[in-house]
Image 1: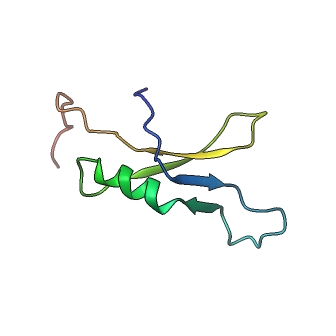
Image 2 (image 1 turned 90 degrees about the vertical axis):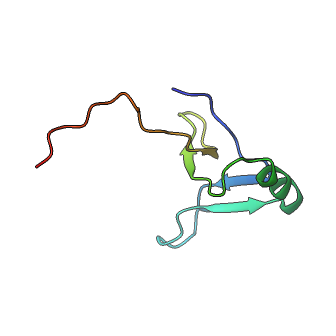
Length: 79
């Protein structure tokens, strides 16, 4: 597993207890922190993963999805 890259200025929370089923979670953005973090990123687009901590913890968090395809991986036969 690669090193986790956390997003500055972004906090992720599970839905509140009485939230309707279509609410999957909540986010809080600190604009100044996030803008500074985004400006420091080399890519134009950044894919994020929303994750839940392992029990017994209940916190959620967001990390950069830095998966890249393996250039040495041989593709299967073309059909």
